[in-house]
Amino acid sequence: MLSPFKQKLIEDLIATSSKEELIWINGYLAGLISSGVLAEEGKPSAVPNPKVGKITIAYGSETGNSKKLATDFGSKAKKNGINVKVVSLEQYRLTDLPKEEYFFTVISTQGEGEPPAGAKKFYDHIHQNGFQLSKLKYGVLALGDTSYPLFCKAGEDVDAQLQRLGGERIVSLMKCDTDYEEEADSWFSTLMDKLHDNETSVSTPKAPAAKKSSGKKIHSGTVLTNINLNDHGSAKQTNHIEIEAADVEYLPGDSIGIVPHNPIAIVEAIIATAGENADKMFSFRNEQYNLFDLLRNKINIVCLPDRLVDAYSGVVKQQIPQTKIGLLDLLKIYPVKDAEQFEEVIALMEPITPRLYSIASSPEAHPGEVHLTVARDNFIVNEELKYGLCSDLLCLLEEQSEVKFYIHHNSSFRLPDAGKDLIMIGPGTGIAPFRSFLAERDATGAEGRNWLFFGDQHFETDFLYQTEIQNWLETGVLTSVNVAFSRDQQEKVYVQHKMQKHGVELFDWIEGGGYVYLCGAREPMSVDVENTLLKIIEEHAPNGTNAEEYLNQLKEEGRYQKDVY
Ligand SMILES: Cc1cc2nc3c(=O)[nH]c(=O)nc-3n(C[C@H](O)[C@H](O)[C@H](O)COP(=O)(O)O)c2cc1C
Image (tube, rainbow, N blue to C red):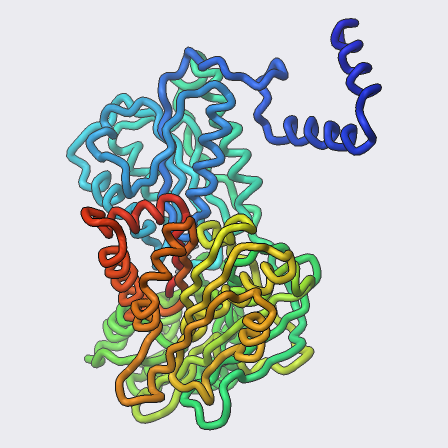
């Protein structure tokens, strides 16, 4: 109940407000309550919590999800009156660790169960042992993806190692799948409760009870269009695929994850070569599958990593030279002796990992749809042309066929405010997120300027989305476009050469608050482009500017964002 004084205040406010203002107040209060920023008594608390000194929230993030969570947690903790420092594990001073009293980590897993590149130094440091963290009270929130064989491995390792070093776990490890928001919030609420309640429960260490993940949301879509964007005579095949899928929520910059299945012909050939029965049950990673299902949907059989080829060689006791090889060829060339050896081989196989593709559509311009730009990967093995498993499946999808996928959020590849200028560098399939950005900016009438650098081999055959790009140029959505077709002349010309040529103007856009985005091949493209950016800064920034520091500052401000693969 309100006091008469407060009741009167509310009545006066209502009496003097328009309908729109009342709707706004209603939404404001609802938002305030659901955001969790109200202290228990209902007031936004600004009074420091005297029971807890400073806390540190350190994140290790590759695509920005852990960073975003850590930053949000930081502001919520501040609103709860807690003195908090949010820092990336990349920049964290390792010598501070033994001095920490409250240290919380949000860390994702990358590669094959590894920490994000920026967190590697921290990860290696704590694994050297040799020191004690007796003062430390800690908690770990691990981000990952259940489709990977080593789910949340980096987070698990950090959690276990901090305990080994003498730290006291005050909140259990939480392992989150790609739909992490709810679980992450619940982990953070538990943490806040512990901190507020620290006299009783903080000193009582709690056994880690890793909560089972609720899993990710798998969407099912229907292929509407699947066309090759390259013309006859191109050395490449790049498909534009439109998938209809209701209720899919994503933002420009996000990707989709697809777990491909293996071709039936290869699955059947493996079963025949091994002299096995398709219905025979096999145990794989603590689950039972019949052999057909296992080979078709669960394990990677097409292009085995060297470590698996080595392990196979150990089972069959034969020397196998290092080469790109699949299970079928291994079984044919270096056969197993009997059913027992085949079982051994199956046990050492690894699950199929998901493949990520940047979304090329915009939620505003293409509601209910997800578009992809997929290069059909090809390579030669023993003089035979082979295709990449997932890109091949996608490029061959018939219209009206079904495709299953999930959304991979990429919080560190996001459009800025509508008024900001964008410089987008995206050769080859790197164009995909920029088609999304441009379509979104077009549909929402964003007033910032847009500049695109695109490149590929030949103008005639490889200018992906040429008509759309030209339309955007005509309608003014694109202020500038610079294209580089590397093989149309003797000297190779790449996007970085075009950037260099327009260095003065490019630097001017950056100095004016512009945002730089880079998407596409990690090597050599992204390295060459980044070196060119540094050169442009060196040449055009005032004397005495340190180009690396300048670029790092842009990164810090979110004005230089990369999505490279
Ligand atoms: C190339 C790549 C490899 C990944 N490897 C793993 C893995 O081995 N285990 C896992 O649980 N998650 C893995 N993930 C999933 C990420 O951990 C997950 O998407 C997470 O939300 C990313 O958070 P971040 O943006 O903070 O890096 C991988 C993601 C990518 C892009």
